[in-house]
Length: 379
Ligand SMILES: Cc1cc2nc3c(=O)[nH]c(=O)nc-3n(C[C@H](O)[C@H](O)[C@H](O)COP(=O)(O)O)c2cc1C
Ligand SMILES: C=C(O[C@@H]1CC(C(=O)O)=C[C@@H](OP(=O)(O)O)[C@H]1O)C(=O)O
Image (cartoon, rainbow, N blue to C red):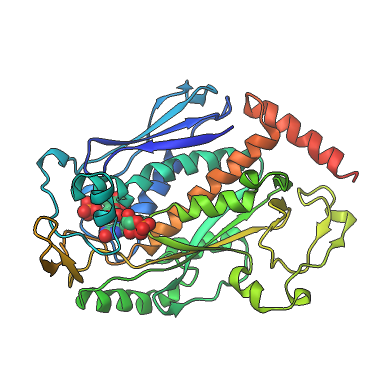
């Protein structure tokens, strides 16, 4: 079983991720991970913190001569802005952040809660996901995440190859697939910031090259749609997850939702084994299992909670009404969230891949993967 946990506070010494169950024999590409860490730090609308940080991956355990050993991997991203001991308590909880509930629940301080609730923690989730993506690549599985909506402004997803999408996304200051519309989005973010307000948006993640049969229908907590939904929903500020048509499927009749099944023997050698679907409304998952089509996941992110023009709140000590606290903050972090969601989805796919083809090493997994494709093609 491949799984991970993270540790670390936003302004603490360091952030750690502990990956257990990662197979032996993968050569870790640090540069690829660092590119994703940098991308997560970027996107138009980020606050001052990102000028202080230059996130870099360190691997503390589980590798020898650059390759994974099959023993637990510990990933580290050090915080440049380490100042936790000097930081003061926040007196007025920010609506939408973990401040109020956390301080009540833990019978403690707002500071002690916000430090861990903060999305700074996602740096190591991206590192874990980027290493998972390197495992996926061995099996020809590729991922991308991009922004499709910011506030009320939307962009249709153009059809194109993953590679074309990557080029477009990497040219866009907001990580959309339509860099020519950046100015519109930047203006919206600037105007909102000038009003002392914040923005959220919608992200889409695509995964291509998936074989039929990752995940299972057999037990509720092993269904891959459920696992993906949990991983995505557990990203800070994500409030909705859709797979394929998602909520739109509820509004259509069955014949306008379900993807017809065709067969093309010339595609028998592909991971989709020759089964073709003229549409992909299911978003690549049926019965909690991958169906050989691209996985399409969307996530809705709420606006940032810390407002320069704060909402009503109270003082925790006296309970008298006061505006919520304000401290340095992002105005819009949807672009960063697109990187995070891509990587948490990638991790779940890698975990499902290890579940199905797992052995102790990548080489063993490859052997089992080939055997499965050969046998499944005879069904
Ligand atoms: C990439 C990213 C950056 C974020 N930056 C901020 C921020 O600067 N200020 C803030 O108040 N919330 C920020 N958030 C959102 C909070 O972390 C989040 O709302 C909070 O932890 C409460 O959790 P919940 O929204 O999931 O309920 C950010 C979220 C993400 C994904
Ligand atoms: C540090 C990151 O995001 C932080 C997420 C965050 C929050 O409350 O979630 C609050 C801000 O922290 P700070 O007060 O230090 O500026 C963001 O900058 C990061 O993504 O690397």
